[in-house]
Image 1 (spheres, rainbow, N blue to C red):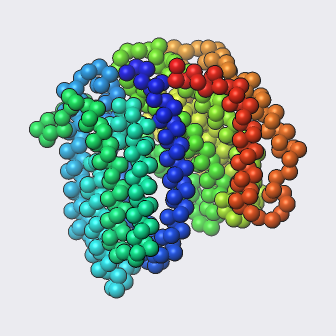
Image 2: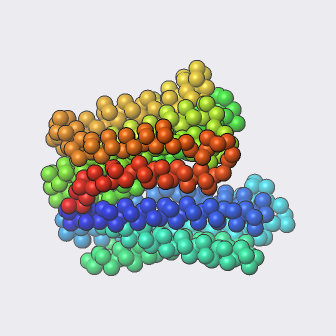
Image 3: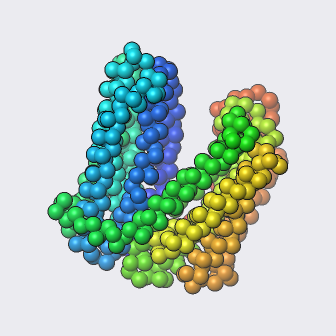
Length: 504
C-alpha cells in the first residue's frame, strides 16, 4: 500500500474537482430556488440549522482525523485487531455523543424556537422541522466516521463519487419538493436523509474493504483510544485554532471599525479562499499516504511523497495565483456585482499572496508533519501563527484600516511558512535545502516561464470585455476563462512529464 497514493492521486484529485464544480453550480440553483419558494422565516430558519451543523466538526474531538491516520497505519502493518478496537470505540463514542446531542436539543426545543423569534403561527411547522433535523443529526454524527475511514484506505476518489451522487439526489428531490409545495418538515427530512446517504455509502464501501475489522460494541475498549488521545487532542486543538483564526479577522474589523467594513474585506477574502480551496484539492491524498509510509518505516517513500507533491503544488498553484492576481478586478466585480474599489483590490492581492505562500510552504509540509509524528510541532506553529495574526491585525487595523487586518494575516503566515514549517519538515525528512529547491525547479522553470510570457502577452495585447464599461457577468467570466485556458496550454504541454511523474 506504500505506493497506493500514486495510483489513486489523479482519480482522487479529479473527482474532487468535479465535486467542487457540481456543488458550486447546483448550489447556485438551489439557493435561488429556496430564496424564491421559502418565506423569509423559513429561509432564515433553514440556514440557521445548517449553520449549526457546520460547527459539528468541533464535537469529534480530533477522533475523525485519528481514525484516518490509524486506518492508514494499521492496514499498512496488518494490525486488524487493533484497528477493530479503535474504530469500534470511536464509533460507539460518537453514537453516545449523538444521542446526548439529541436529548439536549429535544429539551431546549421550545426555548430555542422562542429565542429565535419564531411566531406562534409557525411554531408547529418549524418545531417539526427542528425535530427532523436533530434526529437526523444524531444519526449523521457517528456515521461521519466512515468517510474518514475511506480516506485512511486511500479511497478518497470513492468518497468523492459517493458524495457527488448524494448531492445530485439532494438537489433533485428538494427541487421536486419545492415545486410541489411539500411541507417544510418534509423538505427538511429530504435534505437530512440525502445528507446522510454519503456516510452510509462510505460505511458500506469501508466495511467491504476491511474484511477483518468489526465494529461490534463488545470491542469497545477505551484503552485503544487512550493510546491515541495525545494525537486526537492535538488535532482537535489545531482544528479549533484554525477555525478561530479564520473568523478572527472579521471579529477584529467589526469591533474596531464596524460591521459594515466586513463587506469590504470579504470581497477580497473570497477570491483568496477560492485559491486555497483549489490548491487544497491537489493534496487530499497526502495525509493518509504519509501515515501509511511512516507505519511501514518507508523513509525514502516519505521523502519522495513530500518532494513530488511540493513540486506539483508549485507548478499548478503558481499559474492559478498569477491569473487570479492579474484578473482580480473583474473577478471581484463578477462576485459582488459592484465596481471594485481600491481598498478591496489591495486586500484581495495581499490575501491571494498569503494563500499562495502558505500553499507553497505549508501545503505538503503540514500534512506530512501531522501524519509522521510532528503533530506537536504543528500545534505550536498553529498557536504562534494564530496569536501573532490576532495581535498584528489589532495593531495594524488602526493604521491601515481594513487593509491592516489582511497585512496582519499575511506577515505571520509568510514568515512561519518559510522560516519554520518548511525548514522543520526538511530537517525531519533529511532533505537539504539545496536538494529541495533543485527538485522543485526541475521540470517547472521552463513551463512557468512559458506561462508567464503568454499571460503577459494576452493581458497587454487583448483588451478584456470588462474594459468596455458594460457589466455582463457571464461574458466577463467566459472571457477570463478562455484567457486562463490559453495561458495554461503551454504550461501543461511543457510540464506534462512533471505532472505525470506524481503517479509513477
